[in-house]
Image (cartoon, rainbow, N blue to C red; front, side, top):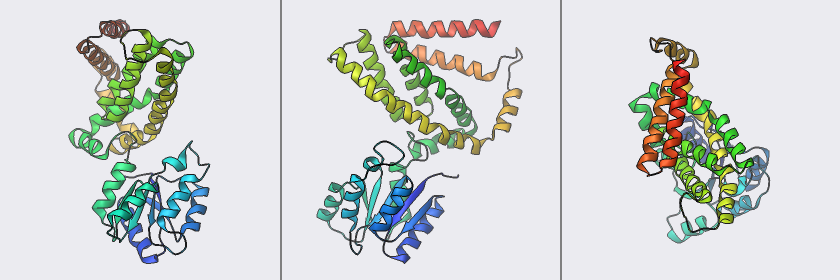
Length: 317
């Protein structure tokens, strides 16, 4: 499976750079390979990377000092890019105090040289999963169980992401926190379906906060604090969804190209000519209604049942 990840590797040893390049190539990862801190700063000023691997013991500025400088850099295509960029230090030293110093400098992790494929794979899974918001093991499990089914669910999920964003922004613009709560609840349920459990948890927090604002549940915070949480955390959720979208569509395309998906959809329509996508949406709404009922939220259950009724009426016309 292909990857669009691009790493920066910094090492003063040409041999070490070549070994790392071979490992990354075996994982389908492209990279830039530079010698020394100055070359690293130049590379980082020219483009954004998904992860940086830096050797500790280099002439001039060592790995710890290099990380400290990177964390203070400004710019990047994304807000706070240099502060959040995953950086791993490579070292042949076996010294717990030194490792602690590396982490304190701002490194996200430390790998022992010579670099091992399994160690590198573990770091990649943690810091640069193939799909943002879905751990590699969860993605692999979904693909192993039913790849074509997962691809179909992914396409349905991705198709609605722009509309999700528009609905949530409209609800916030209108200060309609009831509608906002319904929307983040829907995101929570759909993220669970595709194994994006971290995003599901983030949406769950926003759902509970929205309910607190409307007075449906208490959470011990002031109305002002709850609204600030929504204001700060909602853009993060929407940004994460936008990041996921192209990566998820890449996964779906590899499993089943769009032309094959379209052909399969035509063959799978019911005798009544109801599109399979609409039937699946109806099932998802039913799942949401059952989940709300299980949570004891009768208001939200009623809203989902109304959605089911409206969709059913439309399909029967």
